[in-house]
Every structure is written in structure tokens, then in C-alpha cells.
Image (tube, rainbow, N blue to C red; front, side, top):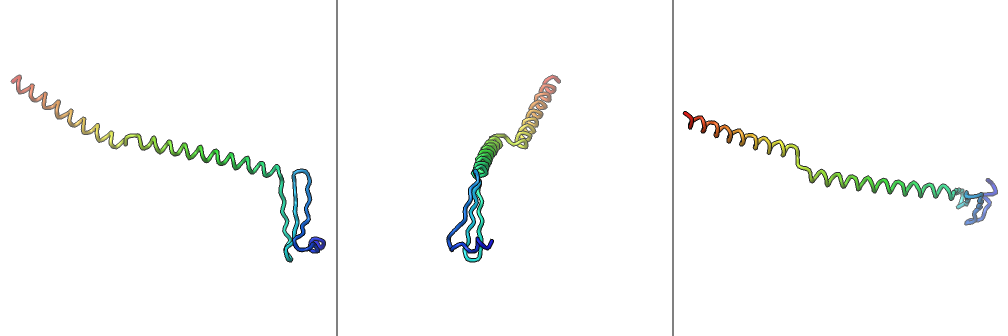
Amino acid sequence: MDSLLKLPEGAAYTKRSGQANIKVATHGDTVYITGTCDSLQRQVEYYEALYHTARDALEQQHEQYQQERKQRTSPALIGTVNLIAGLFAGVFLTSIIITKRKNNE
């Protein structure tokens, strides 16, 4: 640690082993240590791409669902229309039956 503190301002110690890198630098009385690994970076990029693909697919699926939902007719509206049609049919058939009974008498 003493040798790191004796580094001149702006100087750094670096070491590479395979795909791993480390850099140690001092600024004032603070020691900064940075480590990187090429294979780890590839893993991060792979999972970021996977995440973005999944997110985009989910957003597209959500948009399709919203469009289908807008295109569907409301169940309450269908029920109301059927009720009104049933009432009209009942009134119409009842009036026909009453008219035929009056004509037969």
C-alpha cells in the first residue's frame, strides 16, 4: 500500500491476466482501483440485448392486446341490445297472438 501511495500524481499501476485487467491509481490521498473482464462485458452485453428483446416483445404484445380490446364489443352493450330485441320480439308476438284471437272470436 505504501508503494501505491508513493506513485506520482496521474501515474497508475496496471496488470493484465488473460481477459482480466486491473488498474490502480492515486489522486491525492485516495486510491482508485478499477477491474474489468472482457468475458464479463460480453455477458453484460448479451443479457442487455436479451432484456431489450424481451421488453420489445412484451410491449408489442401489450399493444396488440389493447387493439383487440378496443375492437371487441362490450358485453354490457351486447346484453342490453339482446334485452331490447327480446322485449320488442315479445311485444310483437304478443300483439300478433292477441290480434289472431280477436279475429277468431
